[in-house]
Amino acid sequence: MKIALITPAGARSRSGNRHTAVRWAAMLRALGHKVSVSVQWDGLPADVMLALHARRSHASIVRFRERFPASPLVVVLTGTDLYRDIHEDRDAQASLALADRLVVLQEMGRLELPVRFRRKTRVIYQSAEVHVSPEPPLRRFRVAVIGHLREEKDPFRTALALVHLRDLPEIEIVHLGEALSPEMAREARRLMRNDPRYRWLGNVPHWAALRWLSRSHVLVVSSRMEGGANVICEAAAAGVSVIASGISGNVGMLGRGYPGYYPLADEQALACQIRRAARDPRYNLRLKRLVAERRALFRPSTEQEGLRSLLAGLKPRQPPRSRSSRTGPKLRR
Image 1 (spheres, rainbow, N blue to C red):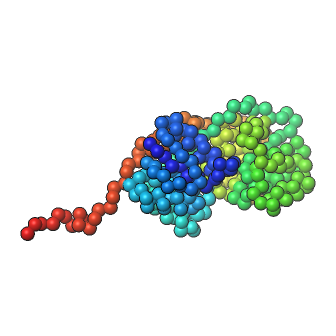
Image 2 (image 1 turned 90 degrees about the vertical axis):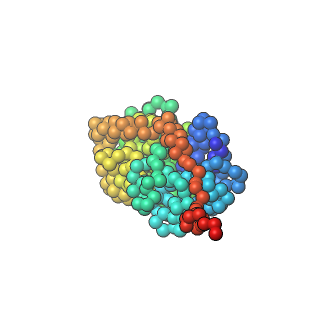
């Protein structure tokens, strides 16, 4: 099967969308399919289109549907799709209607969709493999924050929480991710000057980010919106506990009863969670155990099986019936 896989993230991007596209392309090729990955559809024939991002891939979605009206079209919904665009953007809304299947990356995502679209929606969790042994420092309690510096990630919430942790000099925050604006970079540098316990290391290769993660005691995911944070999958694979903002996308990854949430944008509540994890080893071990229990959802074999099942369930579209066919055959006179 020829598959056109569309992602708005270019080949040099280190965004989550690009990682997903590259990983899925490899999995689909292993299943025997031919896959082309591009930012915009090149117009070449394909049996199926898989488009990441309902809004940003909308032009490719429309052109593919117009040229190949019978070919199946799958739209994969990102965090900004689910928690912003499909509620206010006409292109994103139109992509939902044009798709034969919708894919969300965690179980809560389906609930963001209009009821009429939920039957054609499938859940495929992302996966991760980490081959680095956990080696957190003994004399410091290291907190990892991994994600590009942009508004959707609420990137500085963990650094701001340090104001409420002045009595814990052993706390160390290591922040990895590219600043997507000069203002974000300036703010990161200002926060480092204010408190040396916060270190922003900028954009690093993926292997280096995994090494830092495995050498941390806890990961903080402070996002305002998440489609399904792959870094949570990586934390599960690395055996690292997670503290997360209590947004729908994080709850869909970690489960409704997970005790490591804090209210979004509340640095004082986040500080309480960090303090408890640092001072109460049993609590941190409990978080780690609960994250590990979700690990089966985040295995590559589970993700690949989800893709296989998705494609197996696709069928060519039936052409719309003409008016004459709806009124029945004409009688000869």
